[in-house]
Length: 402
Image (tube, rainbow, N blue to C red; front, side):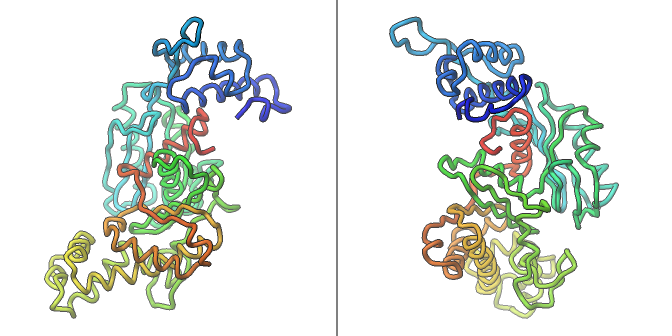
């Protein structure tokens, strides 16, 4: 992007900030680049680029890495953004634990910690979050850019306020302000599925994707939507709450207070519950013997991989329902890449093939044929890394998601 396209009526201070971000982003994106190439790429004057680079060198955000190839004159000095120039703290508030990671500017996890929730919610859950954050703050030896956090629920990302998180019993909680006051650092808060989408979009290796839907399928189900390079959150910050859309006329109560939601059929919680109900009446199933000890999702995965008929029936039914939801998204958004992440992806290609088949069957054929549905590529600390990507975007402007 050229500077002339975005400067417009910007004030002098705004212009300096825009120039700073343009130069930093260009160096970050290109890996190694000369000052002259930065000037050509941004449309800024060489003197402006040199001034900004000197500031970035002084801040430790950019370093010189030697000389490039000469084109006839003096060989240019190359610049890069070191991955560890800044560290970021990413946090993931899950159903059973809070996970945290120290992440560098390339999305690499330098250290990961977690604390169990053990059924805590409300103020007690917040205390556990504070405890983990203190441990992470003490564990880093690099300058910290700030804190990014992903949590279930409806999140007002403009203020960092949790409007409603059912499982945590958080309502109108000014979480961003709370953490900012504790740390003195910038804090950015997002819905966990939206944070997962940022991680996959930013660090998942999809260079040609400008739009993407990332569906997180675990104990809950939610989608993060990136449209033309921007995270789409909806007018009420609830875009992607597909897990709480009613898809079946069944008796199963959902955590949101409704019945028949997608989460009650297609989540890990739902398939385990169904296996526990059916296995006692299926002595021929390998799941039958596990009920006494408390059937788990691990048991179901093993049975499914072993070809157990009951496990297959349960998994296929869940995949069918998820596929229909995916098909609806294909028709509503016409996004050509849909990425599935979360614990259910452990069921692998057999589960994925059913999701694909049902999505293609339930969507308009022309759109469905143009859509890829695949399993995500970011394997570790997905939400924490995505929350860090959100922080990078707001504080440095170097993430592809803006």
